[in-house]
Image (cartoon, rainbow, N blue to C red):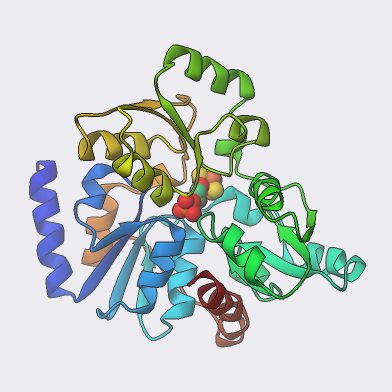
Amino acid sequence: MTVRELQDKILKLKKETDTCILAHSYMSEEICETADFTGDSYALAVKAKGVKQKNVIMCGVRFMAETVKMLSPEKRVVLSNPVAGCPMAEQMDKGMILQVKAQYPDYAVVAYVNTTAELKTIADVCVTSSSAVKICRAIPQKNILFIPDINLGTYVKEQVPEKNFKLLSGGCPTHAKISEREALAAKAAHPGALFLVHPECRPEVVKHADYVGSTTGIMEFAARSQAKEFIIGTENAIVQHLQFAHPEKAFYSLSKDLICSNMKATTLADVFRCLTGEGGEEIIMDEATRLAAVKCIEEMMKYGG
Ligand code: 13P
Ligand code: SF4
């Protein structure tokens, strides 16, 4: 079977089974082409609220599927490939954060959406890479315990100097492995290119950026810009999407190592198997956890706009 034939089968099954496919922008081109909606984690969360279909397949990682389930408990939500987790989301658990919270009782817990449902139950508000600065500025609390990503937290702290931040040392193993030396080498190799970076990268990489933003932010910036060349400092799927969308521009990867094996776990065949009921994993969440965890997602939408 060709890719096109498999995509056609997916499109047909999707209609027959009343299923919506949501795909994070790190998914492959062939998966994104079958999706009803693609975007960054914030956009996917907002979209998840208004999905009409009774079934949702989330092509992304586990915390994204959990977010959909929290917002649409009446729907059957399936994670496209059960092994696709986000290592950052597993770095800190509820017990550990409760201990830190006890030391900083007057700090609001601001949790990156890349966290487990269990950890979200004790967060005051959730943020994503595209909404973190806006939300940290907007919430009434002056003191913020930002979990788990120290790189995103450092970036937000610089942008929101009027607040006090306590950061912990979690982070994305994919983005955090990129060094300043690699950033400088990429800029030297492409001196005319603008450097667009995800805030999960280290501060010494981010400081060389012409633009810092989420996956959608990077894609929108590259689309609007008059520049012709760009170095892309996030997962390499974005380089490919941008090159398809703007063949007249050139996109270079910051590093061949910018590959998230969890995001890469989902294949087009997995999407097909979810639709035939033979693959994927239905997200099951107990109602007490859901009710406690969804509050910080709702706060995120309130302050994130
Ligand atoms: P976005 O918020 O840009 O979608 O990022 C999610 C993510 O996991 C990045 O590594
Ligand atoms: Fe998690 Fe990093 Fe992969 Fe994003 S790129 S899903 S933060 S491991």
